[in-house]
Length: 493
Figure (cartoon, rainbow, N blue to C red):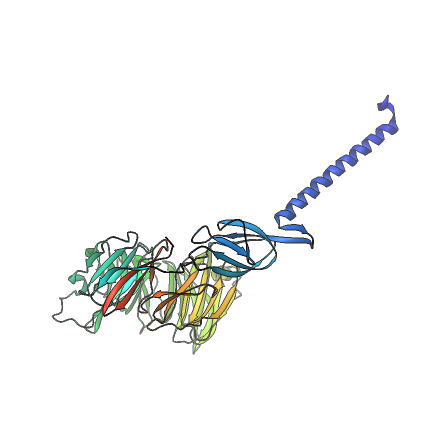
């Protein structure tokens, strides 16, 4: 019997063990192959290469994708593997200007390009309203639904256009006289003008500065119900302030600042009492919430110096020491649940970007927070986060420096077209593109200086406006001493 044959039994055990080992080796090899395939590794005639997964989307969608001039079989809103390396990408659609960019594919990574915007080759513009003169003031709500234009016949009235209903008649609102003139309405009015301070995120309330007869009042205008408008200069008259802003874009919370005494207060609309500790000797500030303020102060600073600090609740965190300047650039926000703080000034080309500086200090109180990136630009005069907070832009005229928080990439470039006065800075069209007016035309380009287009005529007094879906561009232009509100489609019908 075989089971009594010890040699044969031993041989069968050995064969069984070898079989188990071979199976284990095959499982390990299969797992390794799957891991390497997942990481983008492929075998080619040139050996083993590593690929990256690249996703493309566009507006309009679908559009054709060309990789190194070769048309891909699938249009946009698709992903495919590309071996590591540099590629020239073109996205095109009939009737539209192509979008182009050179990309660096990194093996084993997923890269997403969902922002390409294709503008029509031929822009079709219609006049949708006519004003008796060029309006002196126009502004758009944060949601891009409402366009607020000063009435050219009665300066204290506004025309409110609902851009979500392009064909609708504008609503005319009138600011009550008892709001504008707390004592009594002047017999004669001169020098009337409006200045935008800030919109609230509720898209109903807007903080404006009303100038008249060599004086001014800060007015909170409610575009849905003008009777609810408030004269903040009178409401907060017990405070000594000449500058005002919303706390975290909330219409019921305010920063009151005096540019002479350098004192900053925070007050509530519902109960006009100080709601936060007073900051003194403040040269500049930026608030993010009711308990977070980024500011520059000379309090406790060496002679000729200033301190940049962030106050969170009742605790102050020292970020850096800096020299005195006539203009400070400060901003902070959260991106992917991480705080980013930006600090610069007009007499220093270095603009520092910090990632969560407060936590850096908490984790190691013996060390100052260190910047993750320094944007360098001569005499910077403007700083802004993009609409999606992914990009940080620093500017001086047509010289730009941009940092991408998602990829850690930085760009520094000069656009070959000057800003047209009275503009002092460009602004974000959306989360990925910048716009400004040059030579009475709208200029648009990607955050990295790519896909620059000169589009339609526009006034440099205010930037063009886009509806919430970016299907239309609205501009106000002057023709034969009349003001025209125009609408231009960004799609080919």
